[in-house]
Length: 349
Ligand code: KG4
Ligand code: ZN
Image 1: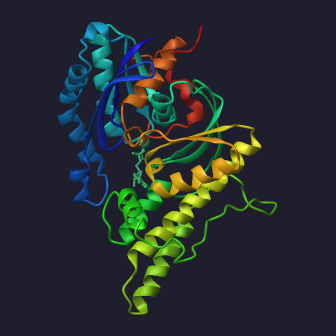
Image 2 (image 1 turned 180 degrees about the vertical axis):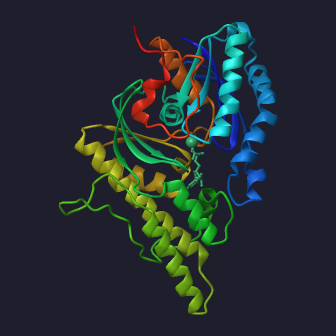
């Protein structure tokens, strides 16, 4: 059972954690939200600079919180893809440097594999196969998890990611950034049946609709038209009702696809990951549908749904147990399919 120090800097959180296999010894997350809020979204240049300013302190805090010194660390890991290139470079360079200085193995980790591993932090007995529903600011996918590094993408979004849709709708409702948590809170005071919005289906060439893919850009446009119409009619826009109706539509769309996919592939467990896994509407819809279909649905605690380094360490520890380590020549990549995860590790001889 390896103890891993892991770093995550793919977007706007500077995160460092120490995990022992599936147990979290410490987890530090320094959010940059306040800095980016003034720009209405994440500014890549600003994110890199913030990571640089924060990373050393976050590493020191993670060691202190875990009450461990370098001797007790077996390996050092960092997210290497996908994400903002400049931001990723800060974490990856720090991890490589520490691994060289302390003479430890180094591992690059795929950010989405980390989100899948977040579930293990609270459900330590969970083992593949299972279905992962990944819903974050940049991704919306249904992944068949077969084992460590073994993934098949069964469904994905054709346009906006679920979190992106929340952020864009929040912006047009003038609710600020990031949109997910604000919409979630407002939706709880609104009537989700107030407005009927289109779910966004993906057509198949031979007719019919894709069972697992999602599309959220039409829904976003429908919300925009609805708000414009309500404004034109001269009344006050019932923001809570619009938020609730939008959230319900997203939650239903994701639930329907995840359940269909699990049933079709004979998988009895759905593990949800990514920032949108925090959403109360999605949790309610998916849990109810899972009970109805006799499936198990697992949500990590909120702090492990959004970006953190504990999930990265957990994935790295598992790879290490299979003898996977990364070359020091590994670089960052802004895009990398989950099916390409094994590219990050030394080829097996
Ligand atoms: O996984 P994450 O922290 O970062 C990425 O890897 O993208 O996800 C961030 C996304 C943002 O779009 C944010 O608006 C959304 O997750 N989010 C939520 C909630 N909390 C965060 N969306 C809906 N409801 C929430 N409660
Ligand atoms: Zn993420």
